[in-house]
Image (tube, rainbow, N blue to C red):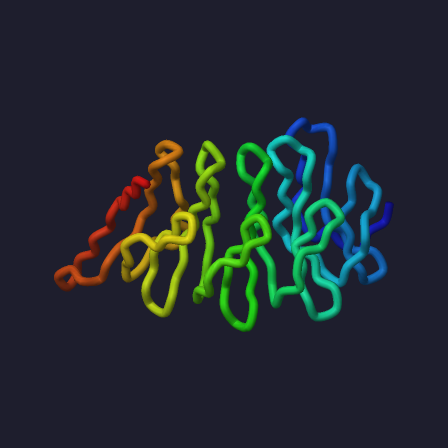
Length: 193
């Protein structure tokens, strides 16, 4: 098949029995599953996510001026933008980030979380019961555990990720600028809940 362009990485379903990717044909973009196109959109985001059991595919898609999170063929939205579709390890929960009215939110299982300046690094705990992500409001940075903010820091290291030590404990790398001139203190902030 001839494409005008490939718009995403090539992603295999967890059992390696299906290949998906986003490609442009005649100015419109679709998800192709084993070479067959799905619905065409004006744009599709770079992050394609299969559920761990391989039964669900989620991605961001733009139609006209609005973005949607598409899970299988169901469109959730509209939003100003959508990114980072993330499934829990048991495949029962889906979370993603969305911008509404200039505020970033996490949408988990259809529930819209509080507004933040930015949100990123969404992770479900290994037992799939807890949703944790990093967020920022103004100049304050912190982790959010099931909607509850942890200790606030001046910054979180760029590209810092949440790492679970167990289903009830995780860590990330924040730092504060309240150190003596010329020094920088980086913390390993462990959160147990």
